[in-house]
Length: 491
Image (cartoon, rainbow, N blue to C red):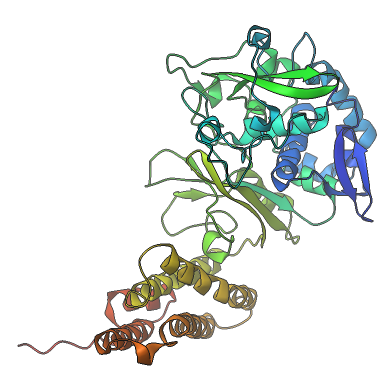
């Protein structure tokens, strides 16, 4: 039906805007720009798949090897991938791509619709409760094999919680994906994110062997299998059902592989406290702005080894040799089993000297302190919950461009001067958000509420001026000496 190595099945956009279908080895064509699936989550997963294929068949041995092989070489890639073709059949009686070796679909007469392969599809309980209001059931009654293959890989790579025994991905549900992008097209994007390593054999792929199930709580650790499985993890036990050339159903069994303590090369990690277990980062709802950059785009230094950028992002410091690049940040923001938002953003990749990295981290911490003070000051104006959180988010959005400008200028001017300028930016944005919510209709409020609002604004001003515990912390984050604190008179 479809072989994912030899057939042309991946839609891509060329640099001139035209579209075409390619086989994986053709990713090394210089004319290609980016995958062109109908959904952004499939595009990101497609990049992960292409990176995984190169890591499987022909990874760089080290930085010198990576540097020497930057130029595209489709013929070499085709020769290296060809031996893996038997492991990448989508259907058939032998091993199936990303599917359980056990042919259990023949024993079940009522498979799930193929819609279940998409993370934002209505779950079984949602359908039973007739609660599929935003995302309707049955969007994809039949899938073309290529789309089914890409959706299958996406689900296995990003699998959220799925009910009893249905395992999440090795990075948890809805992991954050970070990819280095130099902006030169598809092959440079893929090659920049292939980790160092050695070629593997087809038998290293999890669907080429019986599934390591987890009925009794069994776990699979990174040292138990070959490293390539990080890019081809298979937590779900799935089998596709085909009819008349299309994928019409999916059969699922519980208790697939339970991955434990893995570090995926395309995902940043963090620790809840120094010395604790590394945990994969996950996107939050809303825009991915500078307040989210620490430990993802910029190294986080202030709390020791509690946040670690993705391995491929760290590698760029050696590979890039000062060349400009961005970090493509993507992933589902999940609320347990429910997808809330899909992040697809870009941020500059900047490796700074230690002193400047500390300074930038202080700028971010200062903004967080002002955001907290603003949120508290809005208590007489806005109710607790999403409305006040939206005002806090508006503050970060308002200061985004100024932060990027300060970041660009920081290496060229005096740090103290730039810190004062950033404090002015924060003050202006905080009062703009506060006044935008507090001043309209102020005269119509009760006198007591008017007094509360005025006092809250004064408190916000004092904080920004460096007074109080939060204000002192704010100034110290910026490397500024807070003013002498006024002592209260003894009663």
